[in-house]
Image (cartoon, rainbow, N blue to C red; front, side):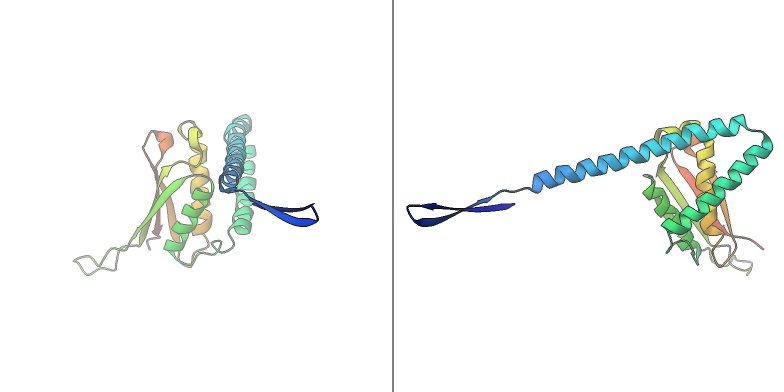
Length: 193
């Protein structure tokens, strides 16, 4: 930050300048904004994790099915709007990476591992291509251990991307932190004929 001022003294013009390093001040402001965003995310997640299960438990079977359908439709439109580039994945790799991107945006941490097995010794066709998304930090933070519905919601996000791929894909929730595991594992595979 630079400030310059002028003044006259004995009919002479003097210019005075001050230079101030505001790097630390800007970093603090950025930290405040990041903290506010994280707090807002946490509040939103808390509302979802606390209210949705209560609503589902208080409804009859038809009401629950209707609510889940409406949530799924809304989820679909949000994914299409927020992730237009990822909304039409072509390959299993793109599906897994789009899903991992959403988890990261929600505050989670994951890594994608993909493989394609070679032909078996019997000369059969190759095994289906597989991608695993290992989630080491749950996007739902402290809610993970008490709410399996959130794991199902995450599977729904992965399935929404998978349903748009050019090849039929299967999405399975293999293990979850809600069941006491150290990580969640989502398997995405090419459907078997």
